[in-house]
Image (cartoon, rainbow, N blue to C red; front, side, top):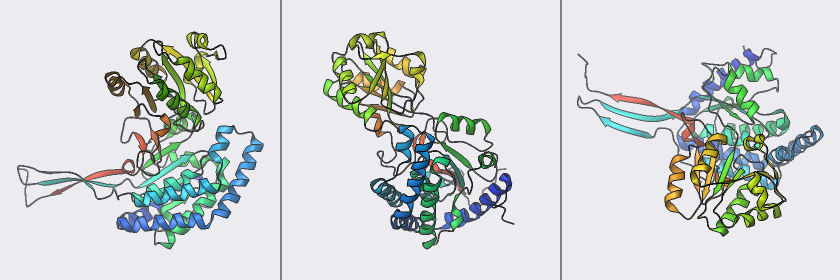
Length: 422
């Protein structure tokens, strides 16, 4: 009996998951081009239903403003014609990516004649728990389907109407191309007990991906009985080395912070080498762009408009036009600061000294480490991966932008001719 409409959270998730697993078996058996065609049909449905999706987003935005959500969260929630077109374009881009399933990762012939192949396959059923961003509904669904996975989506209450409208359009498009509707499901209620049921659904859900703030990720990691692919906060640091080109430093630093302050790739801490001659210009440029600075004593001595930084500032993801600034004594000092306060997301060095840059790239232990480029490039689309599930900051399975490859695992195929191990 389908219990998805009952008040038993465990039974609801079990019913959804069993339906999704059955659909995933059909989805994985489809040829890659069949899945791609279905995703293109979903992108077309998003465009066709744009009026309904935007109307749903207006409801969410009104409720969010009444609830007093921060400007950063409102920016993440907002949809308009351009953003919705971008979501549809991103879904189409996923369809155009090479099918990862069936790829032979390695092949070996053993001395006894056994032929061993390691082949990429879907993970199975993936649960996505996310906040604020309605685009995740389409991005996650497209990526999971392209890699042959079913997906169970649970979005935040602030985007409930937008998520439902996007999911309805996406599912309609998939169904028109022969993909079982149960392959992409949205949890039908915002009851938090359903999240707990998802986290406890070992054997039914194969992997959970949390995408949101520290509180969400911490809860998922603490309570999950299902493997978790975690996306932590973006405590991203840019270090301006003594040998940085002043023009590059100005441009990269302002973009890294101010292009979009509310995304996880935004810079939150700026470290400037004490020997860099253009510190004053860089800091003045940030303030002219509308950024409030909180600095250590040496940063404050450069410009009296800089407020004092407190201990908590070095560990705060502002997601706003606020930035922590410290003056450091060389690369070792900068890397020690990153090791103490970074989240392993994205860290940047600006320098014309190739040896120092290579040392920084090798020694900073983050998922993404950059040289002379804005941290705002920390994005699956910018990496050529299409849409992304998130930026994984752990060490296992996948790291950095998680796209198609990160949504697969592998199995071994062994072909013999009667060999026995005597």
